[in-house]
Image (cartoon, rainbow, N blue to C red):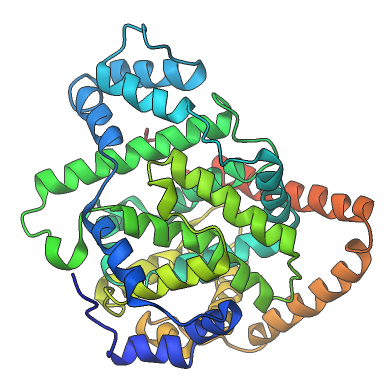
Length: 399
């Protein structure tokens, strides 16, 4: 493999003038081609443990039987002598092995940071990390090919929100906890989707797209939950301490490990994260028509969701999210994704959020007890949004 788009206009604009330049300045690094050579093999590597477990459960047994096996060992520890399918045993033994580098205290620093961001964090995940990710054309192909557009954005957002809220709480990642069970479900869902894509898709472009849901795409995705997440929050005026930054990278390194990504490839700081993101983007084409369709579906979710009763409330919410897209993302990315420009008075919404955050932080970042109050308030905000999504998501599907 070689970088395909390093001289392309979309790549240069992002890294020399846009949000990529902001990241590069923040990390203060010069990309080294050896890093590309280090990561490139991951584009064709996948979670074989997860795939083997799915082949021996969900693709061999009926759904009820397969789910019973997975749920049994998600909720209680598995042993070497357990009468379980060998592939399932290997998967859960790996999941139960807590690596020596994992520090729960450091991970909790990252979890508290996620919690204290409250509604700000959810806006950044949606309007910056997720929406901005659609402009990288190739990583979105599995979503298109698994029929995600037909299933609707409400369910996708609910699933993502449920995962993120649960895995980013303090002390959440205990073996057999609710967050641990969600990680297993997500890991096997990735494997199931990958196997079905390979089975049913005649024209999967392996050379350009890599393996479906490959390790490098997965690392790029979780960079959106760490590096890009912090970049977006900084744009909203959120102050991030060194402990919070270190904690967030550590938290997502462990989550990535549990999801089957080789741990030594997962970034531990902004320098490593920016460099691997830079080289990953050299093999991603600019947003295409599929990208624009995914962006449109995300915006339309505001109108389809029944959390707000009246149509005018839903339209207002859509306008607010559009204003955030235009405030956070590079102009040409908004144009490629065909996101309508915000109309007045909604265009001033991001500035109101920034000013509000400055005032809030003056009050709550003064001492430890005040900080903890901010964590508690943010946690309540995020859990309330999740509860609303769970209540208003169609129930006619299963995992």
